[in-house]
Length: 120
Image 1 (cartoon, rainbow, N blue to C red):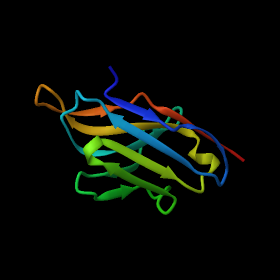
Image 2 (cartoon, rainbow, N blue to C red):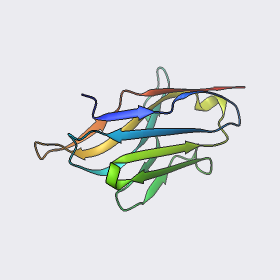
Image 3 (cartoon, one colour):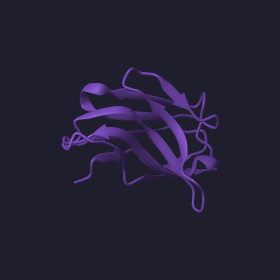
C-alpha cells in the first residue's frame, strides 16, 4: 500500500557513509520532483535535497558538499548518498515525491520515514 518505499537507514559512526533509497509504487504514474527531507523532534521538517525529472538538484546548506542525490527515472527511484556523516545528521529522513496518481491528480506523497543515527 505504501506509495514510497524507503530503505538504507541505520546506525553509523561519525565520518562514515550511508545510502538511502526510495522507490515509488506502480500506483504512481509519473513523478516531477523527488527528494529527501528530514525532521528532528519538535522541529519543522526541512529540505535535505531534491532532484527534478531533468536532473536539476537542490541541496540544503548543511549537507552541500557531503550528500549526493540521484535518481533513476525508469524505476521512479531516488537515492541519497550521505558522506562524512555528523551526529547532527541524526534524524528521521523522509522521501518525497510530487506525483501523478491514477486519478490524474498531482499530489505531494511522503514516505513513512527512516531513522539515521550517527554516533561519535
